[in-house]
Image (cartoon, rainbow, N blue to C red; front, top):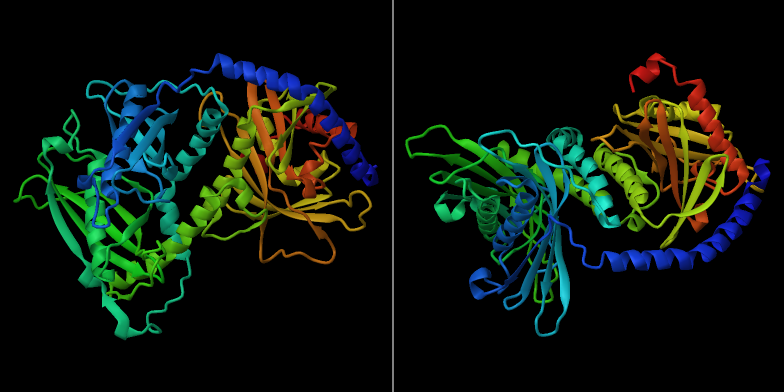
Length: 594
């Protein structure tokens, strides 16, 4: 029967696409009707700001100062957060920001912010920034940002109401926000571990010392007195104002290295350690940590004190900013090398090199569109946190899509399909009389999957990365007319619900390991995005959903077999149900630790 899988798939495709054609007109009609009903829909937390860029807002290049832009971004996001919370809010953190375009004087900045998800007393606000040329009517995307705000009320503790997402975009952002929050909470420890373990080649001795600028020459220190215009109605300094002051001293430090007018390209994720109030003196320090071929990293820290006689200073925050110098054609120019001071200067120099690698990994894996991420990304300590994030968030984005089409229903197993861009996705669903937590424990252990899925010949645990992530080597029998078995190196990432209504998630994707390269014995297979979502439907009742996203060239992946298009695969899914029923009281030590 295994040899007929390819034929099953081909016949299945014919039936799926014919059924899709018959449903497409009805689906579109329903969709158009929904659009008509919700034509005037607008997210209740959405806030928009439009600002005309005047000469007083620009730098020496006649472009909008990033510091001014950061103030507008923070103000818009804060108004959105306060609209949802119904009380004052303060900026807690800002995720990585990558600036794609500069904005010239005379152009318009359009900023849109809305709350993606609310947690207990904090919320994630998504911000989109675009520029508009009033003469040509052209528009450009400038940047996207994610900020965390905390609701603050003096009298009582704030418990935020939950966001109810309506559109596909809102559902996606709401779902993935929980994963982003998880990454923020471990961000500092993650960076410390990565910096401690990241091997960076020391090239200080090999560089041409005749063209090196001493790092101390770039050091900047500036003090700012917090006045009422810099603060909100509670007297706390606007986070955007602090970011603007930080950008100012960082730009000065970068200018001292390149002897030109630098352009800020990126700000790394940072957290505000505590508030500052009107009357505080803020001491801002900046220095160029390292200069690469076309970019430089500037470190900035902010401390606060109340009176000149105070010896104790409160640390407000630290940030790392990446600058470039652009020529007349907006191309980055070569930069001089930096010569760090012995001791702390050399430490900052090496850490900047490590952060650059980490930053590139994070941007590549986290910020890229899914179609831009290769199927199998090399597994490395420097990217494991972001691969895990991408693994789970990709599955959540697939789940949030609202144009799934019911293709068949057999033995209370529903099969849905989704044709989207270059992908054909499958979704199988059933309800089982098993507690969701027990099903989560059983299905997240891939080594047990050969017991119910005959398309898994074996699944060997290669590496238990941490409590939530593991890497398996999976071997599958030959499919169709193939003679060699397939093998896969799969990262399994699991997540418990963040809040009521959230599913248990088991996400699967391919990675590469240097210890398990492709061998002549097997055909190496790859999977882009697949896994289980488990919703608690009641006491001892769980909705089990399996998802798989595949390109037309990789439809014989081992993970596709569960979500296949024939009765054989529905039988496999029913075998999964029986496995859960037979083992629901299994309290093996290996499962208790999951």
